[in-house]
Length: 164
Image (cartoon, rainbow, N blue to C red; front, side, top):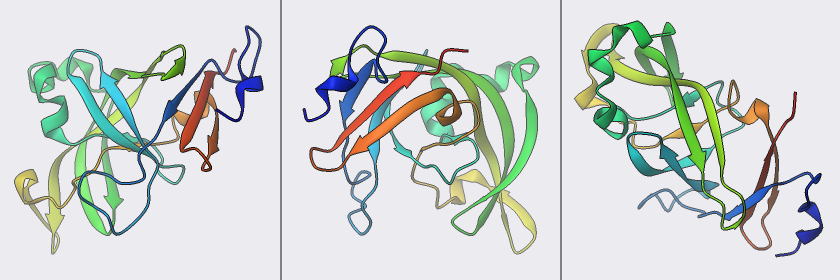
């Protein structure tokens, strides 16, 4: 680990995780993919995406939470576009754990967009027809409450909570 000086009780980072450069079998583009645990739903992989306005998770990843049975948890209805496809869904408050390979894990409670439908040629369609095969860790409520740094020399993502 090259940035070990980032760690201490009052340091920039409280944890670090080695990241993958590819999401699943998608080898065409390099990404920054880290393991994330959705509290109550288990571990998955997600892309750190500073261009995403909010975290976005595929419906099957959050299925164990049975969010459809808890409409009172919906924070907002939302429409967004990912890779040129329009998605309609809900924003829920979820807790995510970033696993540390070095240092301490961190838990972040943040808004997460869960798509319910896609829009094709202006018409709503089943989410089953969605080309969305990735989960995204976006800015609002996640990246904007973390200090983070990336060391591509050893594929390490450093993180720590911003104390407010």
